[in-house]
Amino acid sequence: MKTEEWINTEEYRELNFARKALVINPTKACQPLGAFFCASGFENTLPYEHGSQGCTAYFRNNLSRHYREPFPAVSDSMTEDAAVFGGRANMIEGLKNAYSLYKPALIAMCTSCMSEVIGDDLKAFISNAKDEGAIPKDFPVAPAHTPSFVGSHLTGYDLMLQGIITTLGEEHFDASKKTDKVNLIPGFDAHVENIRELRRYLEMMGVDVTVLADNSETFDSPLTGEYHPYLGKTTLAETADCVNAAATVSMQAYATPKTLADFKGKYEQQVAAFNYPLGVGGFDAFLTRVSELTGKPIPAEITSERGKAVDAATDAHPYFHGKRFALFGDPDLMLGLTAFLLEMGGEPVHIVSTNGTKKWKKEMEALLSSSPYGASATVYPGHDLWHMRSLLMTDPVDMIIGNSHGKYAARDAGIPHVRIGFPIVDRVNLHRYATLGYRGAVNLITWIANAFIEEKDRTSDDAHFELLR
Image (cartoon, rainbow, N blue to C red; front, top):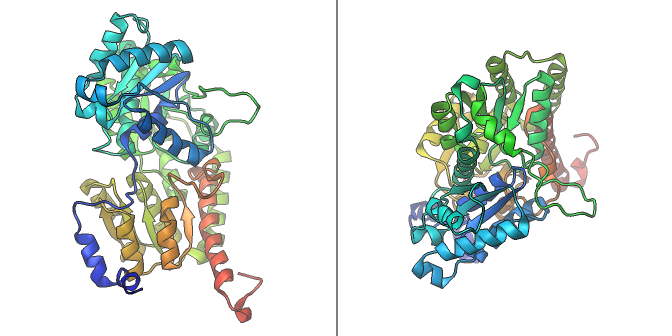
């Protein structure tokens, strides 16, 4: 009991924040998980890990738990022998089996810690496999080096996307054959309905778009009684031609830096990067930039949707105003959520991102300083959820927002927890709701405001258990 009380004190918080060599419940995942997630958005593409079965099973399990969908991926089953002698033989046999058994049109290959530590060269081994007849000479294998001991799932997403575009598109690049198309990169977005929403808005504007990579069907497929392993919606032909597009727009700047650098430099495109533009203001900025890039006006039907979101925000504003929030998750999500809460009159207080950087911290602090509601906020890059627990117990807030891993700290602090991000494994169907766009703004407003109302009902005595809230 004394220990339980002590870990809630300022003294313990100081010791907790002084630790350097230990991470407890980080707000990030490993690189290969992001690589798998990215690969799943492409037509007839098989995610393949050059590593052990256990690693692949772990990433498949995490994706399946969040989306409650089967997720196909393979490994070349590296074991102790491969750790000593290298994984070349495993890869050659693995590629041969994957190609003949699962008949993909593209294999998207990433690495694990084991193969990275021993220094396996993916491009050389893939070439060896083709030379030995394991796969046809012209069969595309997109490589990405994704060691789990650096970076995060965002890094893996970016490297896999870069690898696929390079493999399929580099030879098709022709600066004299630019199209009017726009590439849209959703980033590592746990709420796959956002992809459908973004397509819908761009179609209303008349924008010809290629989504890189569209895994909305992979992680939200119909139950028909038939199993289809490949449901990525971005075709390989589209991907090959994406290098000749007029512009590329990323919804998550911190999930796509290398890919955007290629589009801007190597493929000579206009690029625009956002930080998960949530809320009315955030999505206004996105649509305005797309309109500038394409010359397409924003139609009245979108303006009407915007008006409904503004109406919903006005109705719910009293439930946000003056409330204190703790947030955790990926850098782009934290920027987007913070902007949304400031827009609604909420007060972000504790903002934690294990994969946040010094640059991200400066961006967060600039955003917070732009509003009087950001005055009490502190930003914590490189910190984890055990740090967050100390913050909640010593400097209380009214709500925590983040993935399912925040539920323990929320229970200890006695505050409501709204689940946004990856993974969400203790609630169902949230990935089927948009968070982006004006409809997405209404969803966010509704979830957060109603959570406060439900908490008020739950904690009210009989005299204050009122019908109207």
